[in-house]
Image (cartoon, rainbow, N blue to C red; front, side, top):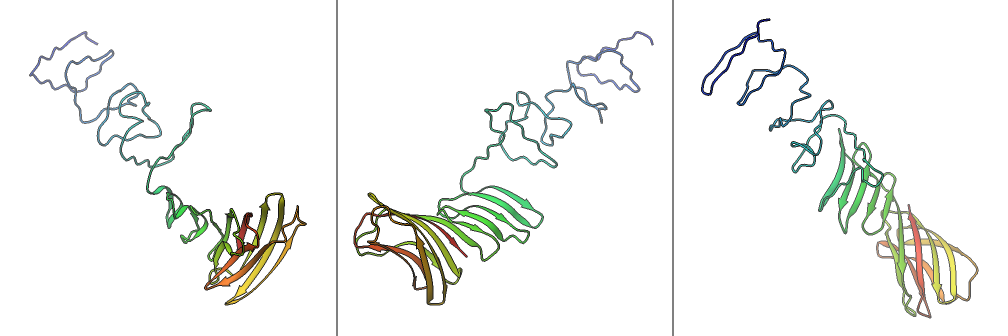
Length: 251
């Protein structure tokens, strides 16, 4: 091959066809073509509005317009997230208000996490979109198909003398019965108990089994009553000062 050199000065154009180059091409201006062939592994700083990250090419976070970046991103395909050290978080989702994170299938939302102080914190749904597991900001957990079973905890810090305290209130139209496990402490006095109950309209029955007392808790009474359209676990006594904790399972 002949040793030749062509110099193109500023403002001039040159049309070259079937050019074969053994060594490098150096240009102080722009080089354009209808297409470039090759894997592009040595190209840097090529970013445009249509730029996309693919499985075979990912820009490192230290250069160009790769991660981190601001704005929306759409990834078509799989994404693997791997922490570089045991002290790094593999994935953090940060958001505020409404839904922070969700997983959407072909028929609807399968899983969602909400930034909410009063409603549902997260929900796992079946193929029809109905929740089969929910956790609320109130501490209630709903499990199973609708109508869901309720699992929750409740605490009252004292039982005012001769006053009825409601630890939990359950809709009689949503649930047919409930099981209550509780502990009651007042100074050196304590007991634990288990109450099972069921109701039908305004009628209710319940039975309680409990441990022997530490000290004396005979002044404390626990009942399940109907009040309006709700069934309620209540506690009351002649003396004040009981702290009652309960786990409630409603079905």
